[in-house]
Length: 391
Image 1 (tube, rainbow, N blue to C red):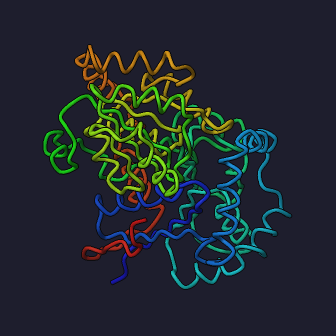
Image 2 (image 1 turned 120 degrees about the vertical axis):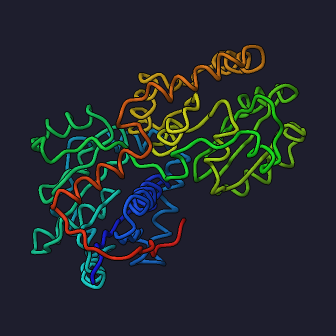
């Protein structure tokens, strides 16, 4: 007997889009093991040689010319990808997309990045008969997400729903699901047990994350943090930037027993559980994971565009502040050192007071609701595992 197949398409432009796809897949699996999900970074899958080159160029641009990224984001803000752009994407990057869909025979396609979303929309216009859901993975609604062939939009907040409605999308096709986070972030672990597992001390702890690409923090900020290592434990998680990790480990200012310099990790949920403050680039996924854990956040140099919108949203919700001066970091380090109980109280209050769309299991639950409403068939079948490996 056939089981329900959900195909999730993403891209590696930033790590958050694919993380969101895996998070939603795992959440659906936990709620209903009779649904089979598969996650594919479509461009890399179809073009394993060209794809990484394009991603590398994008990564370099984000790292060295963030203002240019912001200008491009704003200049195209109200525009969907036009027919010529869709055709170019299809011919150059996604020529075999229809073949992949025909082979996997999904009952539903969910896109967590605008590019595969545009390509699947084009295929639907040419006759593909598979429902398409678009999961917007930021706290904004850029025009490139919008296509008339999309059946349902899954958005982060009521404000993003209003933004889509202003683009003449009917409200019944827009669902405030929140951004999905992996089930690992749904619950808070035992701090003492995790400290022992991670070989960390039981003391005020700051987690500093450079994102999946390990974007660099300025030396003045790093020196300010390192100078407080006697009374505050510092955990630097620098992602896939191996050169930065190596240089930090060799730098004398980071050679302190209370300073830990880490590369890419797949246990960020544990590091958040043992930390009291998160300093991070405000990517949509990292912010949402931090909110799921209730950890106070300081947002470092948002890239103009969606990161600015993300940081403003979480500041307005009371989850953190913009790290726009060294006075901000001084204030928080002093709180951790001298008034630790206030920080812990703030964290517990953030968890209790969060709105429904920031509940960590909300997105998976909402998608399951759409599935069981009869829009997509859910076939009776014994437990089915997710085929795609974790990133």
